[in-house]
Length: 536
Picture 1 (cartoon, one colour):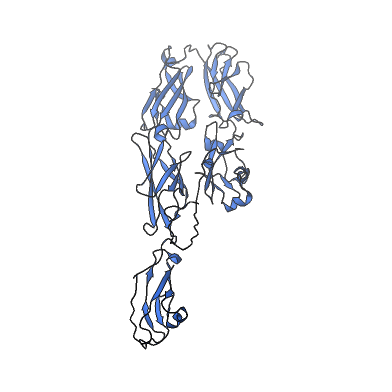
Picture 2 (picture 1 turned 90 degrees about the horizontal axis):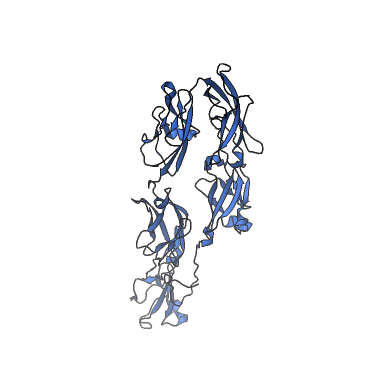
């Protein structure tokens, strides 16, 4: 391994260098591991063997602390087998609402070395909801002059399940006047319609009672029923007509509550009560009706609350115009919500090594983090910057991930800690940003030799000194920490005979105090030199 310029070593003394590298391979952040499970699995159910799919042995599962992370954790990893398990109830309709494709994004995290893998679990729909009509009873008013073949739209049932598990068909109780037709909408939804098979005669029969049944397409079909009460009225031969069959508008998500969004208008060629029109929501989800209100007299639609593009990008509804004689027609309303830059980017630290060896080479991974901005387009594009003049840099990875790596020499004796500020800024106008600061501690290595306070010491000793007396003290310091900075002293050379040296003087290895071992005689020995060594 090549040595960094930050690694210093004393001449003539061997060193063994242990460098801790925390690499994060790009493939780990590339193609995700994918699983597919049905919703509502029991807790503890096995999704798949994550360890095997990541190429790990059973021993590595615990040794490298395999785990998964997500904002809302529905899964866990068995620490012995490496199986990915269901941890919490998974309700597809609650998690993904009306989206056709429902996927949960996870990160599989490994340590020693640090790796992150993307995991995608697709949640498949099961038939866990029955169809439901908004009303248990529907009252219709139909003129006796309505011609055979006339179709009367009925309120459809709703079912939060999708595909085959959603509503498949409708049935109606047998009767001589009406048959049931099922209209398939462009979006695949189905709307029941009554078709008149026999002319009505109010004087002969003034009302009709029908049972409408909705069935879904599950293996064991679920159903719901509603009562259709039909009152036959005298002639009103002109239904209302909307100015448009479909209204489509775009509104900003910053639109204040109570704003007028749209006014729908319908006209009726009849006179009097038969031309008096009222407007009603039809075939519209309850959640949408909570957001918007419709003035029955004017047809003005207003928002009852703030809109949020990040929550819902658009709304679809139907409005019925109904005249005083019971005839009605419907139009479609599409409201697109426009994104505004109203969300600051977020910085999410996924892994952090906050203690770094001071002899670490450039490129050592210190932290891994990801950015997230709930806005759309340029408002959601994020760029990250680092505080200046630091021996660290950012490396962009895939899927809005970044690595913080070393980018210069580290010296604990000069800077034992760095406070690194990461700033994330989006491309909105005006741009929004957020910052987070992480503290990085530099760990000591033995890269400093002890140094004496003086390069030489001159000691005067009176002859006939008592044996064992202290005649001098030397001192050396080492800026390293702990055992790396602990100094011991020894005599390594002298101009005295080696065999007689220890009979003259000794030195205390811990304190540096020099002791006379015998009484000195000026006439026999006037001076001598010692070479001392300080070691850490």
